[in-house]
Image (cartoon, rainbow, N blue to C red; front, side):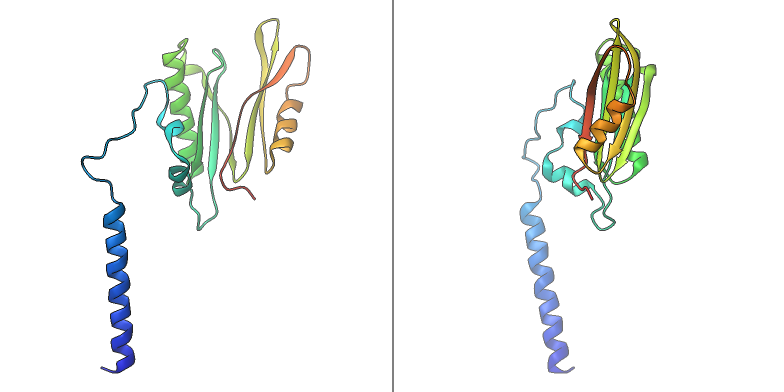
Length: 172
């Protein structure tokens, strides 16, 4: 075994030991207390920025977000910074149903409002005579463009407004 091979092996072993020590030092202990959770706040909303950043598939440069909307009660469920489109949609649907059950009911009225990859998603509604007249969603890579596109979908008599919006951490 040559000197070069020996040095490479020693460096690889030292790097592995340092990495292992760092991982053990940062691992949570059994006595660490979890953050208190409230029944009214879905888990998707309790994530910290560091947790959200870790959920995106950074190597593939993909972060997905989705919004679900209860057309009867106006409750909104959302998911942000998920690795897949399917995961974002399912978390948003579950969130909408949970909020609907906790609020005025009618969890079966939750519909997928839209999804976005690496951008912003807006949900706009139009209220006419105290009733939901229509809703629309739009996405874009910038907040202003997504907002305008969503509001353009609900133009008409009544009060138009943005009901909910989200932007993924990674945008183009």
